[in-house]
Image (cartoon, rainbow, N blue to C red; front, side, top):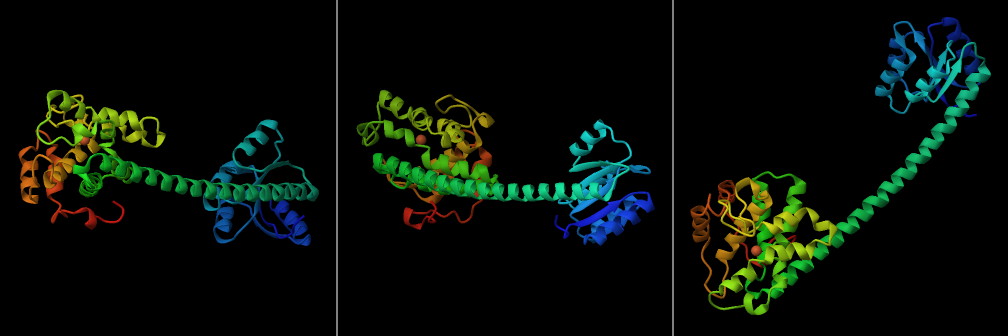
Length: 344
Ligand SMILES: [Fe+2]
Protein backbone atom coordinates (compact mmCIF):
# COMPACT_ATOMS: atom_id res chain seq x y z
CA UNK A 1 0.00 0.00 0.00
CA UNK A 2 1.76 3.21 -1.08
CA UNK A 3 2.24 5.72 1.73
CA UNK A 4 2.91 8.59 -0.68
CA UNK A 5 -0.88 9.03 -1.05
CA UNK A 6 -1.78 12.55 0.09
CA UNK A 7 -4.95 12.48 2.14
CA UNK A 8 -7.55 15.08 3.12
CA UNK A 9 -9.94 14.18 5.97
CA UNK A 10 -13.17 16.20 6.18
CA UNK A 11 -15.47 15.55 9.17
CA UNK A 12 -17.35 17.82 11.56
CA UNK A 13 -16.27 15.64 14.50
CA UNK A 14 -12.89 16.94 15.70
CA UNK A 15 -12.29 13.68 17.60
CA UNK A 16 -12.47 11.65 14.40
CA UNK A 17 -10.14 14.04 12.60
CA UNK A 18 -7.54 13.92 15.38
CA UNK A 19 -7.66 10.14 15.86
CA UNK A 20 -7.46 9.13 12.24
CA UNK A 21 -5.01 11.77 11.11
CA UNK A 22 -2.61 10.60 13.85
CA UNK A 23 -3.07 6.94 12.94
CA UNK A 24 -2.53 7.57 9.23
CA UNK A 25 0.44 9.86 9.84
CA UNK A 26 2.00 7.14 12.00
CA UNK A 27 1.72 4.85 8.99
CA UNK A 28 3.61 7.42 6.89
CA UNK A 29 0.76 9.20 5.08
CA UNK A 30 0.61 12.93 4.44
CA UNK A 31 -2.68 14.03 6.05
CA UNK A 32 -4.53 17.35 6.36
CA UNK A 33 -7.91 17.83 8.03
CA UNK A 34 -10.90 20.14 7.76
CA UNK A 35 -13.97 20.25 9.97
CA UNK A 36 -15.94 22.57 7.63
CA UNK A 37 -16.51 22.59 3.86
CA UNK A 38 -14.88 26.04 3.60
CA UNK A 39 -11.68 24.66 5.16
CA UNK A 40 -11.66 21.75 2.72
CA UNK A 41 -12.10 24.09 -0.26
CA UNK A 42 -9.24 26.27 1.00
CA UNK A 43 -6.91 23.30 1.53
CA UNK A 44 -7.60 21.85 -1.95
CA UNK A 45 -6.94 25.26 -3.48
CA UNK A 46 -3.61 25.58 -1.67
CA UNK A 47 -2.34 22.00 -1.57
CA UNK A 48 -2.29 18.86 -3.74
CA UNK A 49 -4.18 15.77 -2.52
CA UNK A 50 -4.80 12.34 -4.03
CA UNK A 51 -7.72 11.27 -1.91
CA UNK A 52 -10.34 12.99 0.28
CA UNK A 53 -12.37 11.15 2.94
CA UNK A 54 -15.52 13.24 3.31
CA UNK A 55 -18.25 12.97 5.92
CA UNK A 56 -21.69 13.05 4.26
CA UNK A 57 -23.15 15.26 7.01
CA UNK A 58 -21.33 18.57 7.29
CA UNK A 59 -24.05 20.88 8.59
CA UNK A 60 -25.82 22.76 5.80
CA UNK A 61 -23.65 21.15 3.10
CA UNK A 62 -23.63 17.44 2.29
CA UNK A 63 -20.45 15.53 1.49
CA UNK A 64 -21.75 14.91 -2.04
CA UNK A 65 -22.27 18.65 -2.59
CA UNK A 66 -18.73 19.28 -1.34
CA UNK A 67 -17.40 16.71 -3.85
CA UNK A 68 -18.97 18.72 -6.68
CA UNK A 69 -17.28 21.93 -5.47
CA UNK A 70 -13.89 20.29 -4.85
CA UNK A 71 -13.95 18.64 -8.29
CA UNK A 72 -14.16 22.09 -9.89
CA UNK A 73 -10.90 23.02 -8.13
CA UNK A 74 -9.09 19.70 -8.65
CA UNK A 75 -10.67 17.37 -11.23
CA UNK A 76 -8.09 14.66 -10.44
CA UNK A 77 -9.00 14.26 -6.76
CA UNK A 78 -10.56 10.95 -5.65
CA UNK A 79 -13.22 10.72 -2.91
CA UNK A 80 -14.48 8.31 -0.26
CA UNK A 81 -17.77 9.20 1.48
CA UNK A 82 -18.06 8.52 5.23
CA UNK A 83 -21.46 8.40 6.86
CA UNK A 84 -23.40 7.10 9.80
CA UNK A 85 -26.16 6.24 7.37
CA UNK A 86 -25.10 3.04 5.67
CA UNK A 87 -28.04 2.81 3.29
CA UNK A 88 -27.52 1.15 -0.09
CA UNK A 89 -29.26 4.13 -1.75
CA UNK A 90 -26.71 6.63 -0.43
CA UNK A 91 -23.84 4.33 -1.39
CA UNK A 92 -25.10 4.16 -4.96
CA UNK A 93 -25.69 7.92 -5.09
CA UNK A 94 -22.17 8.56 -3.74
CA UNK A 95 -20.61 6.39 -6.42
CA UNK A 96 -22.74 8.05 -9.08
CA UNK A 97 -21.72 11.52 -7.96
CA UNK A 98 -18.03 10.88 -8.18
CA UNK A 99 -17.02 9.05 -4.97
CA UNK A 100 -14.80 6.02 -5.51
CA UNK A 101 -15.76 4.26 -2.29
CA UNK A 102 -18.09 4.46 0.67
CA UNK A 103 -17.47 3.63 4.38
CA UNK A 104 -19.86 3.58 7.32
CA UNK A 105 -19.39 4.87 10.85
CA UNK A 106 -18.19 3.50 13.19
CA UNK A 107 -15.12 2.56 11.22
CA UNK A 108 -11.55 1.49 11.99
CA UNK A 109 -8.23 2.45 10.52
CA UNK A 110 -8.29 -0.85 8.62
CA UNK A 111 -11.40 0.42 6.77
CA UNK A 112 -9.53 3.58 5.77
CA UNK A 113 -6.53 1.53 4.60
CA UNK A 114 -8.82 -0.72 2.56
CA UNK A 115 -10.34 2.34 0.90
CA UNK A 116 -6.89 3.86 0.23
CA UNK A 117 -5.86 0.58 -1.38
CA UNK A 118 -9.04 0.46 -3.47
CA UNK A 119 -8.64 4.08 -4.64
CA UNK A 120 -4.95 3.56 -5.41
CA UNK A 121 -5.81 0.64 -7.69
CA UNK A 122 -8.58 2.69 -9.32
CA UNK A 123 -6.18 5.61 -9.88
CA UNK A 124 -3.63 3.32 -11.53
CA UNK A 125 -6.33 1.85 -13.74
CA UNK A 126 -7.59 5.33 -14.70
CA UNK A 127 -4.01 6.40 -15.52
CA UNK A 128 -3.61 3.32 -17.70
CA UNK A 129 -6.93 4.05 -19.44
CA UNK A 130 -5.85 7.66 -20.09
CA UNK A 131 -2.58 6.43 -21.58
CA UNK A 132 -4.39 3.98 -23.89
CA UNK A 133 -6.85 6.72 -24.89
CA UNK A 134 -4.02 9.12 -25.64
CA UNK A 135 -2.29 6.51 -27.81
CA UNK A 136 -5.56 5.86 -29.64
CA UNK A 137 -6.15 9.59 -30.16
CA UNK A 138 -2.63 9.99 -31.57
CA UNK A 139 -3.19 7.04 -33.92
CA UNK A 140 -6.57 8.41 -35.05
CA UNK A 141 -5.10 11.84 -35.70
CA UNK A 142 -2.22 10.30 -37.69
CA UNK A 143 -4.72 8.30 -39.75
CA UNK A 144 -6.84 11.43 -40.29
CA UNK A 145 -3.77 13.28 -41.54
CA UNK A 146 -3.00 10.38 -43.92
CA UNK A 147 -6.57 10.40 -45.21
CA UNK A 148 -6.48 14.17 -45.68
CA UNK A 149 -3.29 13.84 -47.69
CA UNK A 150 -4.79 11.10 -49.87
CA UNK A 151 -7.94 13.17 -50.30
CA UNK A 152 -5.95 16.18 -51.49
CA UNK A 153 -3.97 13.99 -53.87
CA UNK A 154 -7.19 12.55 -55.32
CA UNK A 155 -8.53 16.08 -55.64
CA UNK A 156 -5.51 17.32 -57.48
CA UNK A 157 -5.48 14.37 -59.94
CA UNK A 158 -9.19 14.82 -60.62
CA UNK A 159 -8.67 18.54 -61.28
CA UNK A 160 -5.83 17.73 -63.67
CA UNK A 161 -8.08 15.20 -65.41
CA UNK A 162 -10.68 17.92 -66.03
CA UNK A 163 -8.09 20.25 -67.49
CA UNK A 164 -6.69 17.57 -69.80
CA UNK A 165 -10.17 16.94 -71.19
CA UNK A 166 -10.86 20.62 -71.80
CA UNK A 167 -7.70 22.17 -73.24
CA UNK A 168 -9.20 25.63 -73.53
CA UNK A 169 -9.51 25.80 -69.77
CA UNK A 170 -5.98 24.80 -68.71
CA UNK A 171 -5.46 25.92 -65.09
CA UNK A 172 -9.07 27.13 -64.89
CA UNK A 173 -10.07 24.98 -61.89
CA UNK A 174 -7.06 26.02 -59.85
CA UNK A 175 -7.66 29.68 -60.63
CA UNK A 176 -11.36 29.41 -59.77
CA UNK A 177 -10.33 27.74 -56.53
CA UNK A 178 -7.91 30.59 -55.85
CA UNK A 179 -10.45 33.36 -56.60
CA UNK A 180 -13.08 31.53 -54.53
CA UNK A 181 -10.70 31.42 -51.57
CA UNK A 182 -10.16 35.18 -51.86
CA UNK A 183 -13.93 35.73 -51.86
CA UNK A 184 -14.30 33.29 -48.93
CA UNK A 185 -11.83 35.39 -46.94
CA UNK A 186 -13.64 38.60 -47.85
CA UNK A 187 -16.95 37.04 -46.74
CA UNK A 188 -15.29 35.78 -43.55
CA UNK A 189 -16.51 32.21 -44.06
CA UNK A 190 -15.84 29.52 -41.43
CA UNK A 191 -12.81 27.24 -41.86
CA UNK A 192 -14.91 24.18 -42.81
CA UNK A 193 -16.85 26.25 -45.37
CA UNK A 194 -13.55 27.45 -46.83
CA UNK A 195 -12.15 23.95 -47.21
CA UNK A 196 -15.41 22.69 -48.76
CA UNK A 197 -15.38 25.64 -51.14
CA UNK A 198 -11.80 24.86 -52.09
CA UNK A 199 -12.65 21.25 -52.94
CA UNK A 200 -15.88 22.21 -54.75
CA UNK A 201 -14.22 24.92 -56.83
CA UNK A 202 -11.44 22.54 -57.89
CA UNK A 203 -14.04 19.98 -58.95
CA UNK A 204 -16.96 22.11 -60.13
CA UNK A 205 -16.48 21.06 -63.78
CA UNK A 206 -15.54 17.41 -63.11
CA UNK A 207 -18.72 16.40 -65.02
CA UNK A 208 -17.06 17.60 -68.24
CA UNK A 209 -15.13 14.33 -68.13
CA UNK A 210 -18.39 12.77 -69.34
CA UNK A 211 -18.78 15.11 -72.34
CA UNK A 212 -17.30 14.35 -75.76
CA UNK A 213 -14.12 16.06 -76.97
CA UNK A 214 -15.91 17.09 -80.16
CA UNK A 215 -18.37 19.22 -78.24
CA UNK A 216 -15.86 20.55 -75.69
CA UNK A 217 -13.36 21.52 -78.38
CA UNK A 218 -15.84 22.81 -80.94
CA UNK A 219 -14.93 26.09 -82.62
CA UNK A 220 -17.95 28.32 -83.06
CA UNK A 221 -21.43 28.21 -81.57
CA UNK A 222 -22.95 24.98 -80.24
CA UNK A 223 -26.20 23.51 -81.50
CA UNK A 224 -29.15 23.33 -79.13
CA UNK A 225 -28.50 19.64 -78.48
CA UNK A 226 -24.80 20.21 -77.90
CA UNK A 227 -25.60 23.06 -75.52
CA UNK A 228 -27.92 20.73 -73.64
CA UNK A 229 -25.12 18.15 -73.36
CA UNK A 230 -22.69 20.76 -72.02
CA UNK A 231 -25.33 21.90 -69.57
CA UNK A 232 -25.60 18.40 -68.16
CA UNK A 233 -22.09 18.62 -66.66
CA UNK A 234 -23.25 19.64 -63.15
CA UNK A 235 -25.41 16.49 -62.86
CA UNK A 236 -22.66 14.37 -64.43
CA UNK A 237 -20.24 15.76 -61.85
CA UNK A 238 -22.55 14.70 -59.02
CA UNK A 239 -22.85 11.21 -60.54
CA UNK A 240 -19.06 10.91 -60.70
CA UNK A 241 -18.46 12.05 -57.12
CA UNK A 242 -21.51 10.49 -55.45
CA UNK A 243 -19.87 7.15 -54.62
CA UNK A 244 -17.06 8.95 -52.74
CA UNK A 245 -18.12 9.70 -49.15
CA UNK A 246 -15.51 12.47 -48.80
CA UNK A 247 -17.27 14.57 -51.44
CA UNK A 248 -20.82 14.26 -50.08
CA UNK A 249 -20.93 17.79 -48.63
CA UNK A 250 -19.81 19.46 -51.88
CA UNK A 251 -22.35 17.76 -54.17
CA UNK A 252 -24.97 20.57 -53.89
CA UNK A 253 -22.30 23.12 -54.85
CA UNK A 254 -21.26 21.10 -57.90
CA UNK A 255 -24.89 20.63 -58.90
CA UNK A 256 -25.83 24.30 -58.64
CA UNK A 257 -22.75 26.19 -59.82
CA UNK A 258 -24.58 27.32 -62.98
CA UNK A 259 -27.71 28.55 -61.25
CA UNK A 260 -28.32 32.30 -61.68
CA UNK A 261 -29.24 34.63 -58.85
CA UNK A 262 -32.45 35.68 -60.66
CA UNK A 263 -33.50 32.06 -61.23
CA UNK A 264 -32.62 31.96 -64.94
CA UNK A 265 -29.78 29.43 -64.62
CA UNK A 266 -29.59 25.64 -64.74
CA UNK A 267 -30.15 22.83 -63.94
CA UNK A 268 -33.04 23.74 -61.58
CA UNK A 269 -33.55 27.48 -61.99
CA UNK A 270 -32.96 28.10 -58.28
CA UNK A 271 -32.81 31.75 -57.18
CA UNK A 272 -31.10 33.89 -54.54
CA UNK A 273 -30.51 32.13 -51.19
CA UNK A 274 -31.93 28.87 -52.49
CA UNK A 275 -28.65 28.54 -54.36
CA UNK A 276 -25.93 27.27 -51.98
CA UNK A 277 -23.60 30.14 -50.99
CA UNK A 278 -20.54 28.25 -52.22
CA UNK A 279 -22.20 27.78 -55.63
CA UNK A 280 -22.89 31.55 -55.79
CA UNK A 281 -19.21 32.20 -54.99
CA UNK A 282 -18.01 29.78 -57.67
CA UNK A 283 -20.36 31.37 -60.24
CA UNK A 284 -18.54 34.71 -59.80
CA UNK A 285 -15.02 33.22 -59.71
CA UNK A 286 -15.78 30.93 -62.66
CA UNK A 287 -17.13 33.73 -64.86
CA UNK A 288 -14.31 36.10 -63.93
CA UNK A 289 -11.72 33.55 -65.00
CA UNK A 290 -13.63 32.60 -68.16
CA UNK A 291 -13.75 36.25 -69.30
CA UNK A 292 -10.01 36.63 -68.66
CA UNK A 293 -9.13 33.47 -70.58
CA UNK A 294 -8.69 32.81 -74.28
CA UNK A 295 -11.47 30.54 -75.53
CA UNK A 296 -11.79 28.85 -78.93
CA UNK A 297 -14.52 31.32 -79.92
CA UNK A 298 -13.08 34.59 -78.53
CA UNK A 299 -9.94 36.16 -77.10
CA UNK A 300 -9.28 37.10 -73.49
CA UNK A 301 -10.60 40.32 -71.95
CA UNK A 302 -8.91 42.54 -69.38
CA UNK A 303 -9.46 42.60 -65.63
CA UNK A 304 -11.49 45.82 -65.89
CA UNK A 305 -13.70 44.38 -68.60
CA UNK A 306 -14.28 41.27 -66.48
CA UNK A 307 -15.16 43.35 -63.42
CA UNK A 308 -17.54 45.51 -65.49
CA UNK A 309 -19.20 42.34 -66.74
CA UNK A 310 -19.65 41.07 -63.16
CA UNK A 311 -21.13 44.41 -62.08
CA UNK A 312 -23.45 44.45 -65.10
CA UNK A 313 -24.85 41.05 -64.14
CA UNK A 314 -24.94 41.54 -60.36
CA UNK A 315 -28.46 40.76 -59.14
CA UNK A 316 -29.18 38.89 -62.41
CA UNK A 317 -26.61 36.17 -62.94
CA UNK A 318 -24.67 36.83 -59.72
CA UNK A 319 -25.32 37.46 -56.05
CA UNK A 320 -24.62 41.21 -55.71
CA UNK A 321 -23.04 40.72 -52.26
CA UNK A 322 -20.51 38.32 -53.70
CA UNK A 323 -19.71 40.60 -56.63
CA UNK A 324 -19.22 43.42 -54.10
CA UNK A 325 -16.93 41.20 -52.00
CA UNK A 326 -14.95 40.19 -55.09
CA UNK A 327 -14.37 43.69 -56.45
CA UNK A 328 -13.44 44.88 -52.95
CA UNK A 329 -10.33 42.70 -53.23
CA UNK A 330 -7.81 45.30 -54.35
CA UNK A 331 -5.66 44.71 -56.18
CA UNK A 332 -7.17 41.50 -57.47
CA UNK A 333 -4.36 39.21 -58.33
CA UNK A 334 -5.06 38.32 -61.94
CA UNK A 335 -2.96 35.27 -61.54
CA UNK A 336 -1.64 33.16 -64.31
CA UNK A 337 -1.14 29.54 -63.35
CA UNK A 338 2.54 30.01 -62.62
CA UNK A 339 1.83 32.88 -60.24
CA UNK A 340 -0.74 31.00 -58.15
CA UNK A 341 0.29 30.17 -54.59
CA UNK A 342 1.61 26.61 -54.33
CA UNK A 343 -1.49 25.19 -52.61
CA UNK A 344 -3.72 26.04 -55.58
FE1 LIG B 1 -19.30 24.52 -65.03
